[in-house]
Length: 125
Image (cartoon, rainbow, N blue to C red; front, top):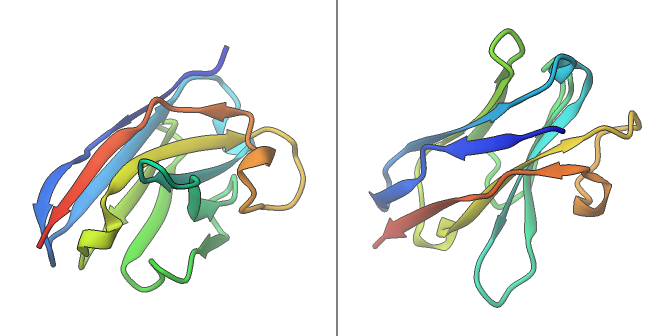
């Protein structure tokens, strides 16, 4: 059973930074694409960023491009989301997810097999 545990959320002022971490269980972490998604109450969960198993390829939502950076440390079974220049509209619960399908990287949440419990990020204006 795969477990994903997010951490690093919190309250920050607009313009500030946070780094989210997602620790994964399992021996084959480096084989799988990892994604970050976020959700605001009453809205659909939306894609934020994705990284390939090797870490060599990344893709971002337009809303966070240039401000957020996804990375991973396969030796630590951990994926990160560095969030800079935060805006109030970035306020959401952030989830990491693992895609074990083996296909191309995808932004579609339906393709992800395992999800963390989420961590709250609140950006005050």
